Amino acid sequence: MTEDGAASNTPQLAHERPAVERWLSWSGLVPLPAFLLLHLCRELQLAFASDVSDVLRTAPGALTRVSSWLLVWLPLSVHGALGVYLVVSGRRLAALPADVPRLARLVSRWTSVVALLFVVYHARSYALPVWLAEADPRDAGFRLLAELSSTWFGVPVLGGVYLLGLLATVTHAALALHRALLTEGLLATAARRQASARTCAAFGVVLFAFGAAAVIRVASGLLLR
Image (cartoon, rainbow, N blue to C red; front, top):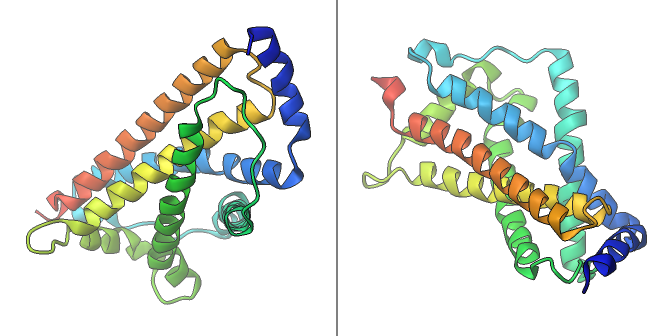
C-alpha cells in the first residue's frame, strides 16, 4: 500500500469501526495510562521511604473514593467486560492498515488476559477488603510489604508475580494507547505511526521501570531492616 493509500484508508477504517470497539478502546485508554503513571509514581515514592513507619497510608476521603470509582474502576470494568465479550463471541476486530504488524494485536490480546488477572488479584487483595470494611486502608502499605517480601524456599515468588503482572499491564496499556490513536484515524501516515509506536513504547518502558523499582525495593525487605 502506498503512503497516499494508507492515509486515505486509515480515516475510513476509523469511521467504519463498530461502537463496541470504540468503547473498548476509550474505556481502557482514558483511565489506565494516567492511573498507572500516578499510581506507580506514588508507590515508588513510598517504596523508598526511610523508615517503616512511613509506609502508613492516609485514609482515603470521600472525593478520592468517588473519583477512583468513576475514573478508574468503572471504566476498567467496562473495558474488561467488553474485552471478555469480544473473546467469547469470537467477533473479529476491524482491520488495521497493512503496514501495522499483526504481532502487536496478538501481544495486546495475551497481555490483556494476564493484566486482567493481575488487576483482579490486586483489587481482591487490597481494594475489595477496604470496600467490605475487612481491612484498614492505612495498613495497605504494611500488607503489601509483608506480601512482596515473603519468600517460598528462599525465592520471592509473589514479587516475581507482581513484576510479570506489571509488565503485562504496562505493555497492554502502551499498545492500547497506540492502537486507539491509530484506529481513530489520527495516524494517517507511516511516519506518524512510527513516531507514535516509539513514543508509546518509551512510555511503557518508563512505567515498568517505575513499578519494577518499587516492587524490587519492597520485595528486598529493606524497609524491614
